[in-house]
Image (cartoon, rainbow, N blue to C red):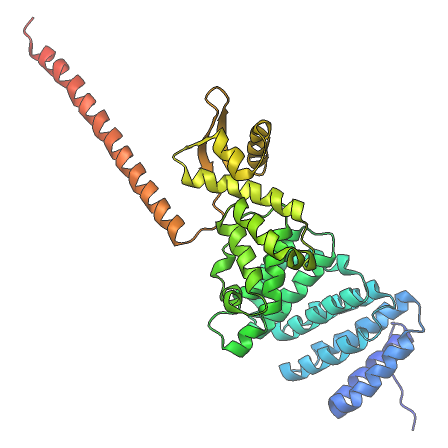
Length: 386
């Protein structure tokens, strides 16, 4: 039996594609439609890229037909799976098709599913530069998708991995690793165990980064669990040194665990440089506004003529706000960037705010008292008879 397909004014090929795809889904559902869509996708590969895009656009348009969200999701899964089956063949073009499909979807979960397939395609096809710009909209995506914890973890880890392999800054990848770890809170031991490898990775990336000096990593349950872990306890100790201790503690750790540090790709000289800056910050937070040159020299294990050099490095890294008093051989500190911001730092801030409030109150009282003193003679002078 011959089926006549009305083609109107569009390309007859597209009319046939549209008719076949829609009829197969409407009449028989996903089981039969999968074969039809698969055949159309295979045949589409033989077309020019322009025609190929048109054919895929028609196929993707199927998601606008069903009224059921479950059916929409089934179609989206079917089409996106077919598109990603050959990631090394025109990967950038395939990404474009997936994003076109994404834009046709209204279901948040279907959008998330297609987006994840796009990320995987970008990785496998080595075209991650095409998906990195979308990460700037991640906050909006998260609000729209309203993902569960498991899906959040999958997303954050995928984004962190892509950013690590791309030319993005280490901070960007690190940010999503931390987001991933934050999702592990109050979980059972088995679930927490899933986070160990990434917790270690986060610590090592923090230690390696030459431009990261602050973090509340020690408060994360996913990282805190490593402290008593037989395999990773030393990695947790290393993080604790970088966030709460000084260079001498790191030097002792290196002397006992140099092989461990090398196994994680950590360069001893780079670690020393970072610990010198962090030790200088620690001196600034513990001294009464002034740090003597000799104390800097001994703490940072440097020569006398290197003291000012390292102070300038700390200023450049925006870790410390200070003045160098060469005459008196001291560094006068006005502000430092805390390595961690925990209970102790909150208490210190509370004390400073209370002091500022009292000082402002005293200034206001003094001004009011002086004003009264000035007003009294004027009042007396006004009563004097002429």
